[in-house]
Image (cartoon, rainbow, N blue to C red; front, side, top):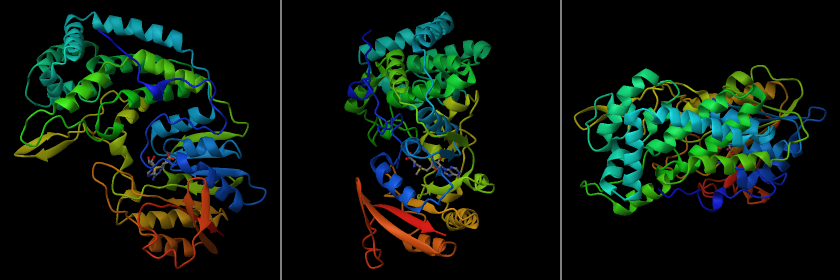
Length: 450
Ligand SMILES: C[S@@+](CC[C@H](N)C(=O)[O-])C[C@H]1O[C@@H](n2cnc3c(N)ncnc32)[C@H](O)[C@@H]1O
Protein backbone atom coordinates (compact mmCIF):
# COMPACT_ATOMS: atom_id res chain seq x y z
CA UNK A 1 0.00 0.00 0.00
CA UNK A 2 1.49 3.43 -0.87
CA UNK A 3 2.21 5.53 2.23
CA UNK A 4 3.52 9.06 2.17
CA UNK A 5 4.61 11.93 4.39
CA UNK A 6 2.54 15.08 4.48
CA UNK A 7 3.68 17.61 1.92
CA UNK A 8 5.37 20.96 2.52
CA UNK A 9 4.47 21.63 6.13
CA UNK A 10 6.42 18.62 7.33
CA UNK A 11 9.61 19.05 5.36
CA UNK A 12 12.30 19.61 8.02
CA UNK A 13 14.04 22.96 7.58
CA UNK A 14 17.83 22.98 7.80
CA UNK A 15 18.02 25.33 10.80
CA UNK A 16 15.38 26.73 13.12
CA UNK A 17 16.26 30.36 13.75
CA UNK A 18 16.13 31.79 17.26
CA UNK A 19 12.95 33.66 16.54
CA UNK A 20 11.08 31.16 14.42
CA UNK A 21 8.67 29.44 16.81
CA UNK A 22 7.59 25.94 15.84
CA UNK A 23 3.90 25.64 15.10
CA UNK A 24 3.52 22.06 16.17
CA UNK A 25 -0.26 22.31 16.55
CA UNK A 26 -2.63 24.50 14.55
CA UNK A 27 -3.76 26.21 17.71
CA UNK A 28 -6.88 28.33 17.59
CA UNK A 29 -6.10 31.95 18.44
CA UNK A 30 -2.33 31.35 18.66
CA UNK A 31 -0.22 34.50 18.69
CA UNK A 32 2.61 33.45 16.37
CA UNK A 33 1.91 36.46 14.10
CA UNK A 34 2.32 39.04 16.83
CA UNK A 35 5.09 37.73 19.10
CA UNK A 36 7.27 40.77 18.18
CA UNK A 37 4.62 43.23 19.41
CA UNK A 38 4.14 41.16 22.58
CA UNK A 39 7.90 41.28 23.23
CA UNK A 40 7.85 45.07 22.77
CA UNK A 41 4.85 45.52 25.06
CA UNK A 42 6.27 43.31 27.79
CA UNK A 43 9.67 45.03 27.73
CA UNK A 44 8.05 48.48 27.83
CA UNK A 45 6.11 47.81 31.07
CA UNK A 46 8.34 45.27 32.92
CA UNK A 47 9.37 46.37 36.42
CA UNK A 48 13.06 47.20 36.92
CA UNK A 49 15.07 44.56 38.75
CA UNK A 50 12.40 41.86 38.30
CA UNK A 51 13.34 40.12 35.06
CA UNK A 52 10.87 37.22 34.87
CA UNK A 53 7.88 37.38 32.51
CA UNK A 54 4.85 35.11 32.84
CA UNK A 55 3.11 33.69 29.78
CA UNK A 56 -0.29 32.99 31.32
CA UNK A 57 -2.62 30.79 29.20
CA UNK A 58 0.43 29.68 27.18
CA UNK A 59 -1.48 27.36 24.77
CA UNK A 60 0.76 26.40 21.87
CA UNK A 61 3.85 27.86 23.58
CA UNK A 62 4.72 30.16 20.67
CA UNK A 63 4.69 33.26 22.89
CA UNK A 64 6.77 31.56 25.62
CA UNK A 65 9.40 30.48 23.14
CA UNK A 66 9.61 33.98 21.61
CA UNK A 67 9.79 35.66 25.03
CA UNK A 68 12.41 33.20 26.28
CA UNK A 69 14.78 34.57 23.63
CA UNK A 70 14.89 37.88 25.52
CA UNK A 71 13.81 37.31 29.15
CA UNK A 72 13.38 34.51 31.75
CA UNK A 73 9.91 33.00 31.28
CA UNK A 74 7.37 30.94 33.21
CA UNK A 75 4.62 29.47 31.00
CA UNK A 76 1.36 28.48 32.69
CA UNK A 77 -1.59 26.63 31.15
CA UNK A 78 -4.06 24.22 32.67
CA UNK A 79 -3.64 21.62 29.92
CA UNK A 80 -0.81 19.08 30.02
CA UNK A 81 -0.33 19.19 26.23
CA UNK A 82 0.28 22.95 26.54
CA UNK A 83 2.90 22.40 29.27
CA UNK A 84 4.62 19.85 27.00
CA UNK A 85 4.58 22.18 23.97
CA UNK A 86 5.96 25.15 25.93
CA UNK A 87 8.58 23.03 27.67
CA UNK A 88 9.76 21.47 24.40
CA UNK A 89 9.86 24.84 22.64
CA UNK A 90 12.01 26.38 25.38
CA UNK A 91 14.07 23.42 26.66
CA UNK A 92 14.78 21.18 23.69
CA UNK A 93 16.30 17.79 24.44
CA UNK A 94 17.67 15.62 21.66
CA UNK A 95 15.14 13.10 20.30
CA UNK A 96 16.87 9.86 19.32
CA UNK A 97 14.01 9.09 16.98
CA UNK A 98 15.64 6.20 15.09
CA UNK A 99 15.67 4.00 18.20
CA UNK A 100 12.23 5.18 19.29
CA UNK A 101 10.73 4.29 15.93
CA UNK A 102 12.40 0.87 15.86
CA UNK A 103 11.17 0.00 19.36
CA UNK A 104 7.64 1.22 18.68
CA UNK A 105 7.56 -0.77 15.41
CA UNK A 106 8.35 -3.96 17.27
CA UNK A 107 5.59 -3.19 19.83
CA UNK A 108 3.25 -2.57 16.89
CA UNK A 109 4.12 -5.91 15.25
CA UNK A 110 3.48 -7.69 18.51
CA UNK A 111 -0.01 -6.19 18.90
CA UNK A 112 -0.75 -6.91 15.22
CA UNK A 113 0.14 -10.57 15.67
CA UNK A 114 -3.39 -10.81 17.06
CA UNK A 115 -5.32 -12.21 14.08
CA UNK A 116 -8.33 -9.90 14.37
CA UNK A 117 -6.30 -6.72 14.76
CA UNK A 118 -4.07 -7.78 11.85
CA UNK A 119 -7.15 -8.44 9.67
CA UNK A 120 -8.73 -5.14 10.66
CA UNK A 121 -5.61 -3.21 9.58
CA UNK A 122 -5.24 -5.21 6.36
CA UNK A 123 -8.87 -4.67 5.39
CA UNK A 124 -8.63 -1.01 6.25
CA UNK A 125 -5.50 -0.69 4.11
CA UNK A 126 -7.36 -2.27 1.17
CA UNK A 127 -10.37 0.02 1.69
CA UNK A 128 -8.11 3.10 1.69
CA UNK A 129 -6.00 2.06 -1.29
CA UNK A 130 -9.08 0.91 -3.24
CA UNK A 131 -11.05 4.03 -2.28
CA UNK A 132 -13.91 2.03 -0.79
CA UNK A 133 -15.61 5.27 0.12
CA UNK A 134 -18.70 3.85 1.81
CA UNK A 135 -16.62 1.78 4.22
CA UNK A 136 -14.34 4.71 4.99
CA UNK A 137 -17.35 6.99 5.61
CA UNK A 138 -18.81 4.41 8.01
CA UNK A 139 -15.56 4.35 9.95
CA UNK A 140 -15.56 8.13 10.33
CA UNK A 141 -19.16 8.06 11.51
CA UNK A 142 -19.22 4.98 13.72
CA UNK A 143 -15.67 3.61 13.87
CA UNK A 144 -14.77 4.20 17.50
CA UNK A 145 -14.34 0.83 19.20
CA UNK A 146 -14.93 2.44 22.60
CA UNK A 147 -18.12 4.15 21.42
CA UNK A 148 -19.27 0.85 19.89
CA UNK A 149 -19.09 -0.67 23.34
CA UNK A 150 -21.63 1.96 24.36
CA UNK A 151 -24.22 0.58 21.95
CA UNK A 152 -23.98 2.08 18.42
CA UNK A 153 -24.82 -0.28 15.53
CA UNK A 154 -22.40 -2.62 13.72
CA UNK A 155 -21.46 -2.41 10.06
CA UNK A 156 -18.56 -2.99 7.68
CA UNK A 157 -15.13 -2.61 9.26
CA UNK A 158 -16.82 -2.04 12.56
CA UNK A 159 -17.72 -5.71 12.80
CA UNK A 160 -14.01 -6.48 12.53
CA UNK A 161 -13.21 -3.67 14.94
CA UNK A 162 -15.63 -5.33 17.34
CA UNK A 163 -13.69 -8.60 17.14
CA UNK A 164 -10.42 -6.74 17.59
CA UNK A 165 -11.93 -5.01 20.60
CA UNK A 166 -12.84 -8.35 22.16
CA UNK A 167 -9.21 -9.44 21.77
CA UNK A 168 -8.04 -6.16 23.22
CA UNK A 169 -9.89 -6.86 26.43
CA UNK A 170 -6.87 -8.97 27.26
CA UNK A 171 -4.25 -6.43 26.16
CA UNK A 172 -6.11 -3.11 26.24
CA UNK A 173 -3.36 -1.29 28.14
CA UNK A 174 -1.53 1.22 25.96
CA UNK A 175 -4.09 1.15 23.10
CA UNK A 176 -6.26 4.13 24.08
CA UNK A 177 -5.93 6.14 20.85
CA UNK A 178 -6.70 3.03 18.77
CA UNK A 179 -9.73 2.03 20.84
CA UNK A 180 -11.26 5.49 21.22
CA UNK A 181 -10.31 7.49 18.15
CA UNK A 182 -9.19 4.94 15.52
CA UNK A 183 -11.47 5.00 12.46
CA UNK A 184 -12.94 8.38 13.46
CA UNK A 185 -10.02 10.84 13.73
CA UNK A 186 -7.23 8.62 12.35
CA UNK A 187 -6.98 5.37 10.45
CA UNK A 188 -6.88 2.36 12.77
CA UNK A 189 -3.28 1.83 11.72
CA UNK A 190 -2.22 5.42 12.43
CA UNK A 191 -3.96 5.40 15.80
CA UNK A 192 -2.25 2.16 16.87
CA UNK A 193 1.09 3.52 15.71
CA UNK A 194 0.48 6.69 17.76
CA UNK A 195 -0.25 4.48 20.80
CA UNK A 196 2.95 2.50 20.33
CA UNK A 197 5.04 5.66 19.95
CA UNK A 198 3.37 7.18 23.03
CA UNK A 199 4.25 4.09 25.06
CA UNK A 200 7.90 4.41 24.03
CA UNK A 201 7.98 8.16 24.74
CA UNK A 202 6.59 7.57 28.25
CA UNK A 203 9.49 5.23 28.97
CA UNK A 204 12.11 7.86 28.17
CA UNK A 205 13.97 9.52 31.06
CA UNK A 206 11.99 12.53 32.34
CA UNK A 207 14.41 15.13 30.92
CA UNK A 208 14.10 13.66 27.40
CA UNK A 209 10.35 13.16 27.42
CA UNK A 210 8.80 16.56 26.64
CA UNK A 211 10.50 17.09 23.27
CA UNK A 212 9.60 13.60 22.06
CA UNK A 213 6.03 14.00 23.37
CA UNK A 214 5.75 17.37 21.60
CA UNK A 215 6.88 15.75 18.33
CA UNK A 216 4.19 13.10 18.90
CA UNK A 217 1.48 15.72 19.55
CA UNK A 218 2.56 17.49 16.36
CA UNK A 219 2.32 14.17 14.52
CA UNK A 220 -1.22 13.55 15.79
CA UNK A 221 -2.20 17.08 14.73
CA UNK A 222 -0.68 16.60 11.29
CA UNK A 223 -2.45 13.27 10.71
CA UNK A 224 -5.90 14.01 12.11
CA UNK A 225 -8.83 14.00 9.73
CA UNK A 226 -11.35 16.45 11.16
CA UNK A 227 -13.03 19.78 10.70
CA UNK A 228 -10.28 22.39 11.22
CA UNK A 229 -7.43 19.95 12.10
CA UNK A 230 -8.51 19.88 15.74
CA UNK A 231 -10.63 17.40 17.64
CA UNK A 232 -13.99 19.12 18.09
CA UNK A 233 -15.66 17.00 15.43
CA UNK A 234 -14.77 14.48 12.74
CA UNK A 235 -15.28 15.45 9.08
CA UNK A 236 -18.81 15.68 7.71
CA UNK A 237 -18.95 12.81 5.26
CA UNK A 238 -22.67 13.03 4.38
CA UNK A 239 -25.16 15.59 3.17
CA UNK A 240 -28.13 16.38 5.38
CA UNK A 241 -30.24 13.84 3.45
CA UNK A 242 -27.71 11.02 4.07
CA UNK A 243 -25.97 10.96 0.66
CA UNK A 244 -22.23 10.52 0.92
CA UNK A 245 -19.88 13.40 0.03
CA UNK A 246 -17.34 11.58 -2.17
CA UNK A 247 -14.87 14.49 -2.28
CA UNK A 248 -14.74 14.75 1.50
CA UNK A 249 -14.29 10.99 1.93
CA UNK A 250 -11.56 10.86 -0.73
CA UNK A 251 -9.68 13.53 1.14
CA UNK A 252 -10.03 11.49 4.37
CA UNK A 253 -8.64 8.43 2.54
CA UNK A 254 -5.74 10.44 1.18
CA UNK A 255 -4.73 11.71 4.62
CA UNK A 256 -5.05 8.29 6.17
CA UNK A 257 -2.36 6.96 3.85
CA UNK A 258 0.20 9.29 5.43
CA UNK A 259 2.86 7.46 7.33
CA UNK A 260 3.01 7.97 11.10
CA UNK A 261 6.69 7.07 11.48
CA UNK A 262 8.04 9.46 8.86
CA UNK A 263 5.73 12.23 10.05
CA UNK A 264 7.12 11.76 13.57
CA UNK A 265 10.70 11.68 12.24
CA UNK A 266 10.15 14.99 10.39
CA UNK A 267 8.87 16.65 13.57
CA UNK A 268 11.66 15.14 15.67
CA UNK A 269 14.19 16.68 13.26
CA UNK A 270 12.49 20.05 13.65
CA UNK A 271 12.62 19.81 17.44
CA UNK A 272 16.24 18.63 17.33
CA UNK A 273 17.13 21.78 15.38
CA UNK A 274 15.74 24.22 17.98
CA UNK A 275 18.35 26.59 19.40
CA UNK A 276 18.16 26.44 23.22
CA UNK A 277 17.32 29.78 24.84
CA UNK A 278 19.93 31.32 27.10
CA UNK A 279 17.38 32.53 29.67
CA UNK A 280 15.98 30.55 32.54
CA UNK A 281 12.49 29.18 31.89
CA UNK A 282 9.90 26.72 33.09
CA UNK A 283 6.53 25.42 31.91
CA UNK A 284 3.79 24.57 34.39
CA UNK A 285 0.45 22.82 34.15
CA UNK A 286 -1.71 24.79 36.53
CA UNK A 287 -4.84 26.90 36.76
CA UNK A 288 -3.67 30.48 36.24
CA UNK A 289 -5.75 31.75 39.16
CA UNK A 290 -4.09 29.23 41.47
CA UNK A 291 -0.62 30.09 40.18
CA UNK A 292 -0.95 33.85 40.73
CA UNK A 293 -1.88 33.38 44.41
CA UNK A 294 1.84 32.98 45.21
CA UNK A 295 3.97 34.83 42.73
CA UNK A 296 7.76 34.42 42.75
CA UNK A 297 9.49 37.67 43.74
CA UNK A 298 11.40 38.00 40.44
CA UNK A 299 8.21 38.36 38.33
CA UNK A 300 8.30 41.77 36.62
CA UNK A 301 5.46 41.39 34.10
CA UNK A 302 2.64 39.04 33.13
CA UNK A 303 1.43 38.50 29.59
CA UNK A 304 -2.05 36.92 29.53
CA UNK A 305 -4.08 35.53 26.64
CA UNK A 306 -7.26 34.05 28.11
CA UNK A 307 -9.99 32.53 25.95
CA UNK A 308 -12.73 35.03 25.13
CA UNK A 309 -15.48 32.81 23.77
CA UNK A 310 -17.73 30.15 25.20
CA UNK A 311 -15.80 27.45 23.35
CA UNK A 312 -13.61 25.62 25.83
CA UNK A 313 -10.16 24.77 24.51
CA UNK A 314 -10.51 21.36 26.14
CA UNK A 315 -13.17 20.57 23.52
CA UNK A 316 -10.86 21.24 20.59
CA UNK A 317 -7.74 19.49 21.84
CA UNK A 318 -9.03 16.64 24.03
CA UNK A 319 -7.24 13.94 22.04
CA UNK A 320 -3.90 15.75 22.51
CA UNK A 321 -4.63 15.94 26.24
CA UNK A 322 -5.32 12.20 26.35
CA UNK A 323 -2.03 11.51 24.56
CA UNK A 324 -0.06 13.90 26.78
CA UNK A 325 -1.51 12.66 30.08
CA UNK A 326 -1.57 8.98 29.13
CA UNK A 327 -5.05 8.53 30.59
CA UNK A 328 -6.04 4.97 29.67
CA UNK A 329 -9.84 5.30 29.84
CA UNK A 330 -10.96 8.89 29.12
CA UNK A 331 -14.54 7.68 28.60
CA UNK A 332 -16.96 9.33 26.16
CA UNK A 333 -19.53 11.90 27.19
CA UNK A 334 -23.06 11.35 25.91
CA UNK A 335 -25.30 13.83 24.11
CA UNK A 336 -28.98 13.76 23.42
CA UNK A 337 -29.56 13.39 19.68
CA UNK A 338 -32.85 12.47 18.07
CA UNK A 339 -34.72 10.11 20.34
CA UNK A 340 -32.02 9.18 22.81
CA UNK A 341 -28.55 9.54 24.32
CA UNK A 342 -25.64 8.81 21.99
CA UNK A 343 -21.86 9.11 22.35
CA UNK A 344 -20.85 12.71 21.55
CA UNK A 345 -19.82 13.05 17.90
CA UNK A 346 -16.46 14.51 18.86
CA UNK A 347 -15.92 11.63 21.36
CA UNK A 348 -15.32 14.10 24.17
CA UNK A 349 -13.92 12.60 27.37
CA UNK A 350 -15.98 12.44 30.56
CA UNK A 351 -13.67 14.87 32.38
CA UNK A 352 -12.84 18.10 30.58
CA UNK A 353 -11.55 21.35 32.05
CA UNK A 354 -14.23 24.05 31.90
CA UNK A 355 -12.56 27.45 32.04
CA UNK A 356 -14.30 30.21 33.98
CA UNK A 357 -12.84 32.60 31.39
CA UNK A 358 -15.15 30.94 28.82
CA UNK A 359 -18.31 31.28 30.90
CA UNK A 360 -20.27 34.51 30.44
CA UNK A 361 -21.26 34.86 34.09
CA UNK A 362 -17.77 34.08 35.42
CA UNK A 363 -15.38 35.71 32.92
CA UNK A 364 -15.55 39.23 34.49
CA UNK A 365 -15.01 37.81 37.97
CA UNK A 366 -12.06 35.67 36.87
CA UNK A 367 -10.43 38.59 35.05
CA UNK A 368 -10.91 40.73 38.15
CA UNK A 369 -9.25 38.03 40.32
CA UNK A 370 -6.32 37.90 37.92
CA UNK A 371 -5.93 41.70 37.84
CA UNK A 372 -6.24 41.90 41.62
CA UNK A 373 -3.61 39.20 42.29
CA UNK A 374 -1.08 40.72 39.87
CA UNK A 375 -1.62 44.39 40.79
CA UNK A 376 -1.40 43.57 44.53
CA UNK A 377 2.18 42.39 43.89
CA UNK A 378 2.93 45.40 41.67
CA UNK A 379 3.14 43.26 38.52
CA UNK A 380 2.26 45.03 35.24
CA UNK A 381 -0.05 43.15 32.87
CA UNK A 382 -0.06 42.88 29.08
CA UNK A 383 -3.39 41.38 28.04
CA UNK A 384 -4.34 40.16 24.58
CA UNK A 385 -7.85 40.83 23.36
CA UNK A 386 -8.12 38.76 20.25
CA UNK A 387 -10.21 38.29 17.17
CA UNK A 388 -12.73 35.50 17.65
CA UNK A 389 -11.15 32.26 16.34
CA UNK A 390 -12.86 30.72 13.33
CA UNK A 391 -14.42 27.57 14.68
CA UNK A 392 -17.30 25.39 13.58
CA UNK A 393 -19.65 27.64 15.60
CA UNK A 394 -18.11 31.12 15.83
CA UNK A 395 -19.28 32.80 19.03
CA UNK A 396 -19.65 36.19 20.57
CA UNK A 397 -16.95 37.19 23.03
CA UNK A 398 -17.76 36.71 26.71
CA UNK A 399 -16.31 40.15 27.57
CA UNK A 400 -16.50 43.43 25.67
CA UNK A 401 -13.50 45.77 25.52
CA UNK A 402 -15.21 48.50 27.65
CA UNK A 403 -16.02 45.86 30.30
CA UNK A 404 -12.45 44.62 30.25
CA UNK A 405 -10.98 48.13 30.55
CA UNK A 406 -13.32 48.98 33.40
CA UNK A 407 -12.18 45.90 35.31
CA UNK A 408 -8.47 46.67 34.82
CA UNK A 409 -9.01 50.35 35.70
CA UNK A 410 -10.15 49.12 39.11
CA UNK A 411 -6.69 47.66 39.87
CA UNK A 412 -4.15 49.52 37.74
CA UNK A 413 -3.07 53.16 37.72
CA UNK A 414 -2.61 53.44 33.95
CA UNK A 415 -4.16 51.39 31.16
CA UNK A 416 -3.14 51.83 27.53
CA UNK A 417 -4.36 50.03 24.40
CA UNK A 418 -2.33 49.03 21.34
CA UNK A 419 -3.73 47.96 18.02
CA UNK A 420 -1.35 45.39 16.56
CA UNK A 421 -1.08 45.00 12.84
CA UNK A 422 1.48 42.31 11.98
CA UNK A 423 4.80 43.58 13.32
CA UNK A 424 3.60 47.19 13.77
CA UNK A 425 1.47 48.54 16.55
CA UNK A 426 -0.21 51.83 17.32
CA UNK A 427 -1.72 53.34 20.41
CA UNK A 428 -5.51 53.68 20.37
CA UNK A 429 -7.09 56.79 21.84
CA UNK A 430 -10.43 56.67 23.58
CA UNK A 431 -12.38 57.65 20.49
CA UNK A 432 -10.77 54.91 18.41
CA UNK A 433 -11.59 52.56 21.21
CA UNK A 434 -15.28 53.03 20.68
CA UNK A 435 -17.07 49.86 19.73
CA UNK A 436 -16.91 50.51 16.00
CA UNK A 437 -13.09 50.24 15.93
CA UNK A 438 -13.01 47.01 17.90
CA UNK A 439 -15.12 45.21 15.36
CA UNK A 440 -13.70 41.78 16.02
CA UNK A 441 -10.85 41.48 13.55
CA UNK A 442 -8.16 43.51 15.31
CA UNK A 443 -5.42 42.12 17.50
CA UNK A 444 -5.44 44.26 20.63
CA UNK A 445 -2.90 44.48 23.46
CA UNK A 446 -3.91 46.16 26.71
CA UNK A 447 -0.95 47.40 28.78
CA UNK A 448 -1.72 47.94 32.45
CA UNK A 449 0.79 49.57 34.83
CA UNK A 450 0.36 49.61 38.64
C1 LIG B 1 -6.32 31.86 23.66
S1 LIG B 1 -5.54 30.38 24.17
C2 LIG B 1 -3.87 30.89 24.36
C3 LIG B 1 -3.11 30.89 23.07
C4 LIG B 1 -1.63 31.16 23.24
N1 LIG B 1 -1.34 32.53 23.60
C5 LIG B 1 -0.88 30.84 21.95
O1 LIG B 1 -0.30 31.72 21.33
O2 LIG B 1 -0.90 29.67 21.57
C6 LIG B 1 -6.15 30.22 25.79
C7 LIG B 1 -5.50 29.11 26.66
O3 LIG B 1 -5.97 29.27 27.98
C8 LIG B 1 -5.98 28.00 28.63
N2 LIG B 1 -6.82 28.19 29.83
C9 LIG B 1 -8.13 28.48 29.90
N3 LIG B 1 -8.50 28.70 31.18
C10 LIG B 1 -7.39 28.55 31.94
C11 LIG B 1 -7.13 28.66 33.33
N4 LIG B 1 -8.09 28.98 34.22
N5 LIG B 1 -5.87 28.44 33.78
C12 LIG B 1 -4.88 28.10 32.90
N6 LIG B 1 -5.08 27.98 31.56
C13 LIG B 1 -6.31 28.21 31.09
C14 LIG B 1 -6.48 27.07 27.54
O4 LIG B 1 -6.06 25.75 27.82
C15 LIG B 1 -5.81 27.67 26.29
O5 LIG B 1 -4.61 27.00 26.00
